[in-house]
Length: 375
Ligand code: ADP
Ligand code: MG
Image 1 (cartoon, protein in one colour):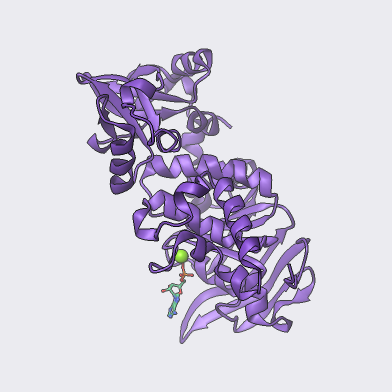
Image 2 (cartoon, helix red, strand yellow):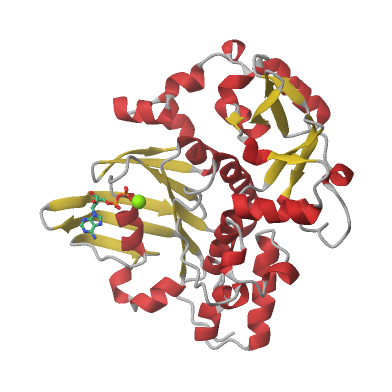
């Protein structure tokens, strides 16, 4: 494909004394930041601390008032901004898919502008849809409004990867999603991250997300970078009160003996409860409407297991109900000790448990969450 690349791989992205002002207001102040090739660097901090501004200066959607930004030691101001942006994937919360274009057209937009053939574009779109766990046959020719929020978010990622960019900028990509769906996408993204092995700058305001995904974490406050380091460094040596508040060092060190399942579960609402008699097709429809990708299946009000969107979409052409395909799930009480719950999950080889309170499903318990808290 005749696409001209600015860089095949990233050695470093370097911001030196970068300042951006809006009138009197300083959005980013004398920022020094180095993103190393191949790492996933998280920027976290309160709203308005300058995270988005920092990200958008790297792909030149915004230009700094002072300072220099280099990629592999080339000043980015020497590149044509459009060409620069085609070498940098950009994923945002409100992913802005074009509503009148199909998924194939949305993902293939830039490749088409770059003069790829129809066949090359189709091949690439198929590959990317597979990559983000959406079946190409079911999704290529749909329109964005026919997709759930989580599915649209995956399309946003696929679109950002269309030109195989060596650098990816992600601005709160999971920020608008329900907490449980967010965890599922984070888990998927962690796997994708290993596979694509590229340099990623990722903005979030969710510390759990930061710990889950980041190789290093930079903490921003009030237009400045306060501290940057690995999760362990930030927990063990927070530079000040603000950092220790954000990394919540106390909670991390709280001893496991004192923790109960309810301290670590993600609450669920009725949205997550599906009847065992429902067909796979109806379940997919309802999940799409309510923007969840996982549901607890109840048979006569008794939980019998769970189903996931990714599995259900493979079943919609068969005449099956949830009862036929439900996966078993271990059940915990909200007062169970974490240690015993972990043992039980480990024995079952599962990664997910259902928490019951007063005979009602009240939450989900993810193995990964617990392990993360124990670093
Ligand atoms: P964050 O992403 O950390 O929430 P931003 O980088 O979006 O923060 O914004 C940093 C500061 O700059 C905020 O105080 C915001 O109000 C201000 N700001 C951002 N964009 C503009 C703009 N286009 N005009 C004026 N002020 C802006
Ligand atoms: Mg922002």
